[in-house]
Image 1 (cartoon, rainbow over the protein chains, first blue to last red):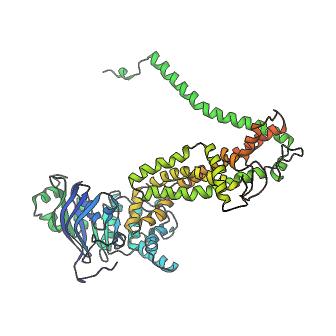
Image 2 (cartoon, one colour):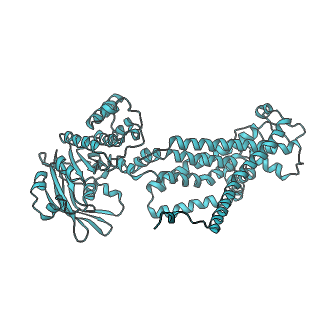
Image 3 (cartoon, each protein chain N blue to C red):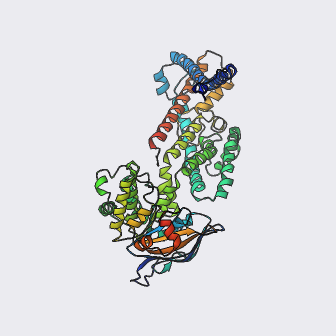
Length: 266
Length: 304
């Protein structure tokens, strides 16, 4: 698939235009328009069921795996709609990676976990190049020093926080442009959470990060932009307010945002 | 309320009732254990009687099996090789087809197709083996002779193939269970890295389910080893040491059928051969089951 970079200095990594997501006849997300800036961390927040995870999963067509799911509107990546006919979701996911709520390393060695993506994408790498890629990815995920002596151990033998960083390394290995993170710290202890947040700041230099989080403190301390979602009376998720994180948390324009971040509901 | 009210009030009827239920449950559980022990004991005692007359060295090194002839030879290998040959052919059929069916059902089929196909497949397991036996003898063998003219009427090839067909549902159903048990989070991880459906199925889900798949294969193999009717009907009654699938052979189970049918007097050496062969068969499947148990434990993946 050729993606035409129509605007090389386009500041946005991903842009949703009037995107609605349906599960069968149920509308889960209602015409969301949202432009995600490159090399920034954007947090999607809101109470349970507000559609923030659904929005995230629409950005790399993970919702395709749900048989009844359907997306209307556009999601632009390099100016091209990833839902246009003829677009292969496999190629989309290669360039827009994902880290999940629960660490889900493959039941393979640490090395093989990282090497999996490059292998299936048919990269012709020598043993040395692959070794280097694995090391670079593990360093990128701040895991190298902890695992360099046990690359052949099963990925599942690591602690929860290490497993999640392994999953990040695995995502980095295919050199995506955007990394979607779906509550990546919800299963982790505070110290592991802090490590992942520090890592996100590192990764921001080279990647665009979109993170769904339940944790208000996390959104306020670890993101550049924040999008606040809420469901309307039909239980469809809506984007209520979107802006720089500092503004959303200190000076929200919408009354509902203010109520939510001050802990009055959700 | 006083503390003493929390104490159990003596209730004789209830106490006796519970005791009786416990005893009934214990008896029920004991029956199967005792039966197994009884089978092993009777097998063992008659087998020992056999080995009092025939040396274990002859049993394991002689290449002919002629206990019903005037010159009696007692080498287990002709029977063991036939059992191995028919079982191996069956596995060549059952493993690939069963696995493909399992992967299709678990990873590719829609819910509706899975709900229709799986019960259909399990019907195969419900067909009596005697029907399979005559199917091999009267349908498959004549058909195969069109391609392999030198094929004997009784042969291990068609018996093995039909036995393999019988075992497809075992492999497919158990492997499908193992594949379906792989958590969806692993599939999502693989899709998230840009895997195709085929890559997810073959490179991630199947390796993650390998212990269950191997267990299903071992279970199918031990069924094949113990299978009696199909081989007795379609594979022949000629004990010979060969791995040629086109000629008549006699498996351990076929021999047991043959001797059990005749009027073999109690206490003769022919009678004891039944137990020696039966015991060998028992050892065979017992080892396979231990092996499969060990495989499942060793390779079981813990996802959480």
